Amino acid sequence: MSTADKTTVGEVSPDLGTLDGSGLRAAVVAASWHRVVMDGLLAGALHGLSDAGIGRPTVVRVPGSFELPVACSRLAGGYDLLVALGVVIQGGTPHFDYVCNAATDGITQVAVSTGTPIGFGVLTCDTEAQALARCGIEGSQEDKGYEAAQAAVATVLALRAVGH
Image (cartoon, rainbow, N blue to C red; front, side, top):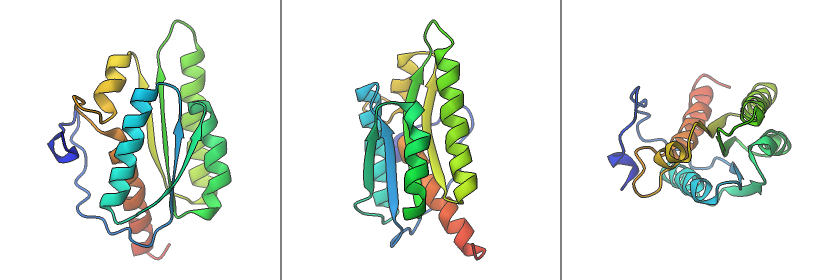
């Protein structure tokens, strides 16, 4: 199923139109836990960047979502945009809350402190089924990797349009 065929649960995703990100330098930082979900998110992000004219982005794999902020921090200065991909699935301990908060707060801090747009593709799900429904693989209803990549490109272009 192509990204254009996927439906969005809840609010409708914004129509970003055709993005021309040719010439932009991009990196994708992807966690490794939950390989099927992460491979789907990564494939979607790479497709989203390719659709925007960005070929051959750097891909960095880290162990989990907790490690995304430090990797993004180290890469931010060398790229026009980053895409951060991960998945955290609720378990029986507060670990879920700590990892979700650390990843979200850390990625936000990197984006704001460096001025580098970061597409946020970290799934925070109650179940594995929810993650599979959002990761862009066959049978998924959404492709959050694609959406995160397109959002990062759109943000760079919006900032450039106003001279930043």
